Image (cartoon, rainbow, N blue to C red; front, side, top):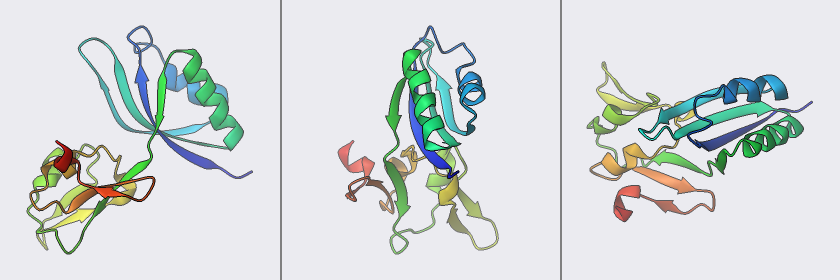
Length: 149
């Protein structure tokens, strides 16, 4: 049985944000998961970037379960790339990276980018002074989030 990995951005309505939704999602549907980012707003609306891992049928059943609870599901169809020739290794991006995908190597004084840890939140793209951190959308178009801000 082949496993698939889906990265999803979930938005939980206030009436659901205090329930064990993710626990039930993975238990009922026999899925593995990795929480990449999570927060609850002052109005108790939850937002989470979540990787779910399982066979395709289990992932689909899990998404149906979430929709039945009123959870909005948005596939993460983007990733962050670094333009190596542009990066000056100033380290500004490391200050806001919630997953620590960007961190400073204390010996070489260079910024390391660990793509496998990146949740594609985009904070680094808005902070990079030389626009070395860019967002690659699903259709292959590169854009700096900061340019649209």
